[in-house]
Picture 1 (cartoon, rainbow, N blue to C red):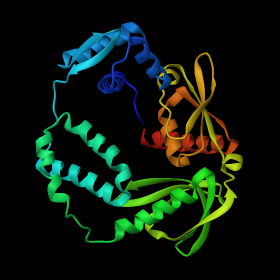
Picture 2 (cartoon, rainbow, N blue to C red; picture 1 turned 180 degrees about the vertical axis):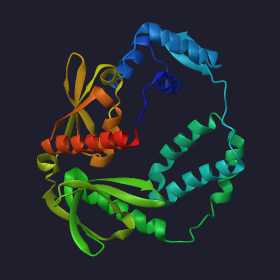
Picture 3 (cartoon, rainbow, N blue to C red; picture 1 turned 45 degrees about the horizontal axis):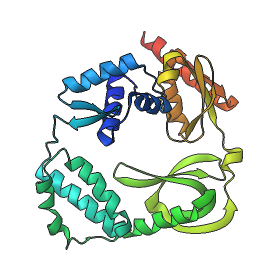
Length: 295
């Protein structure tokens, strides 16, 4: 669960002002777009906290900007090496088209560190070569999945010897492995598939049926949670009421979603589908039974 507390809001404002000057109205509006609602008095308190941390905030032409940042990143020699290797590897895998974006991202980090230490490593990586062809195998698979899935098209894959049709592919990395998170056109559910176990990838002329058939979990958030809630990936607000919002989620793994919603307590209620309501009730009953057994 991502807790939207004062520290999160302060860091959000810090990031906004670090990127470019903004007026008070622009800051409040930008936060509101992320369902973070504050007034001018609260913003003034956050400005005070930022200044007390040692940062210098200035105002020019009605806009606030960060003139000085009091802290730096204490990077190790290995950190500088891997930053340089990250840029070099990205260019080798995806070509010069990503060079500018990669270097801009690293320069943001180095604005808080020692740029000279980073540049000491960049010439040494020019002759860097891979000991394995695995990254390039993944590159081909990822490129095909992105290309064939454009415009919500169905993709035919052979996964562990089984033919499957998938769509709406995104990529996940955890437990030292690369996965795709995709909608399975047969089961009508999202699944995690190990990229290494995909043997073949083919394009099809068909468009995904997900928008028509995929079951969405619709839930209502009330009170302070409704005002501070930040939408998760592929969530959208489908209704705004006086003291609540109604959110649709048809992307997240159901078990993980139920566990997350369970943490919201009485401020959250699942509205549909009927299957989601029943499954959530069963989870609540199981939790209550566990608590009663413990007590």
